Length: 386
Image (cartoon, rainbow, N blue to C red; front, side, top):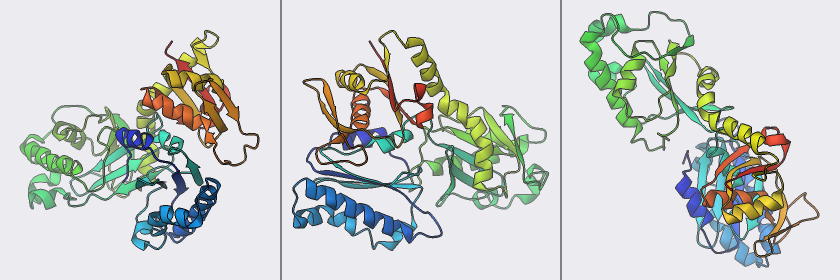
């Protein structure tokens, strides 16, 4: 699965029945894919050690981890990865997710699933798509700030001729007028191009076929993500007319995208997608600064845990890769922090993850970002509803 939806995270949060094993790791999509099962096997070994700390006998931990161990020798599984892998295993649940996000290696055993590494997929620095259009070629690219990859389009026709038949003599005047492998940013105007009217219906119909195909791909496409169109100028408004995608951005990349790599297109498209993806986070950072000192903003983890449990956290910033191990007592409203923060010890949980989960369950917004992007550079920061 390429995109994990909010309702799936909700299901994982509500899973009961400890122990819950959560494993995260980066994965190779090409090249040295044999490193994937080696890393995974080491993380399983770490999970087994933690399960022993929970009091499970070796035979019990072996039984719990058996579905995961079967993946070690599943060669096709490792040859079809994305940027990161997340695995969740409990006595009642076994789920894996291939994700468009490079995840740090982590193996955690708690009384619930550890989910904080997934929250960047729900925050402002998420993913977007580039749809590169020409009458000769269609490409879909899944992009983020640091990554880009081509999405397999399955049975979608790759060219106008494949979908509509040989109309070469009729549409030759609409081919890209240059072989230059360049694109530039430009607003997508609505209207007619010179000489375009006689083929407008055919082009729109072709793009409708492509758009319908995107809705039925075997690989999930997040249709609510922003889409940046790339192609010769007169084609982009035609696709907007044909499409039912809700978030095609007003600015596109005009020019000939054929021959440009996914990474080259991502670099140019990120300039268009970034404001759309990050506007809410930037506003939240400004709001935190405005509320500092009023009692409606805090960087104190114990205070934030209590507020999150009460449903008072409107917006939570968490630092990626930072974990604070300990226990939280909601009745006493106290946090007890583990002395040795180097690695999880039995019975403790990541308290930042606990705050994020409580915030998510109560409808708050979470921004999982690099630590320097958290207000004032803390590991966690929150804006309260009241």
